[in-house]
Image 1 (cartoon, helix red, strand yellow):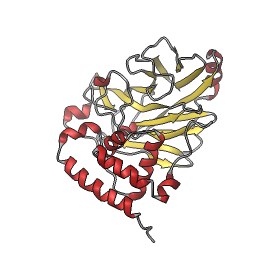
Image 2 (image 1 turned 60 degrees about the vertical axis):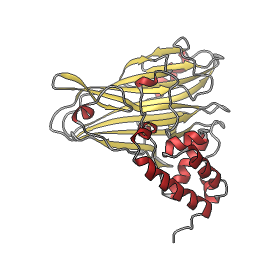
Image 3 (image 1 turned 180 degrees about the horizontal axis):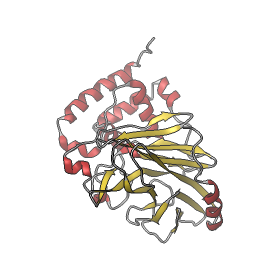
Amino acid sequence: MKQAVPKALLCALLMLTFVCAVRAADPINDISEGRPITDPQELRYWLANMNAHHFTAEEVGLSLGLSTNAAGALIDSSHSDAEFAATSFDPPNAGQIVVLPYPGGRHPRIGFLEGAVRPQRETKISVFAPWQDGGYLVVDLPEAVWHHQDGKRQLLYLAHTHVPTIWDKQGVRLPRQEWDRDAKTGLSLTREFPNKVAMTSRAKVADGGVRLEFRVTNHSTAPLTGLHIQMCGMLKGLTGFAEQTNDNKVFSAPFATCRNSRGNRWVVLGFDHCVRAWGNARCPCLHADPQVPDCAPGETQIVHGWVSFFEGEEIAGELQRLEKVAFEPMLDP
């Protein structure tokens, strides 16, 4: 038996549907990557998610494709919704790492925005630090996928608009997707491309950090070579880590690390098969970019990643420890 939708939330949903219909005819608003949601349970989830990110009404509107006023009315209506209260997450930054899909609506970078127009949320996860008011790291899993095609280095996928992909050049628009959310197995998303290549991203809290996985499956008749993947950790939302400099970072493949402004806390991003650890000070961000092994027709190749947080001034010993344990395969298939 279906549960009744509270009257206030129902009215807000009707308003949302109307505003979304108006906005759909206005391509200018596409810059927000707004994603209308009319299913009550899904709407509750994303409102709780954005509340955990401390979104303003304007940012909620940009995420949902609404005006700020309509988003504010929706937020107000949720306060009287008992199911919304039950949906809300335990407070992040309360002694444990929390991973959520990034909701969009707030640009995950501080600078170099012209290099990341219309950032897509389906590649992005928020990894909340365990420290009180610690904020979150946004991981692009992946940011970009390069491969060799017709003797040239080609861009198979990009998580924002900047450099044209092979699909942009063909006039093919890839569909929007959302993370699959499972309390046991974590977050996962599989994207299948028109050339019969699929990529799957996964993230799960485990063993004092977050285990990441990226796999490529080749259903085509041609081998996939030169699979260079850009994996990016954006520092804007991580409290004390957002200085636009690389002086606070240590790049030691397979890890890229950043320390906070006080010098007593670190965030670590790493991938096995890492061919380049680096950072862009303007964003600011960390990169631990792996090279996925060549993938023959019918094969799947996997690389494993890691995010964790460390307290202390000396990071070298922690990286030595992590290199032995960070890249274990996920136990779930």
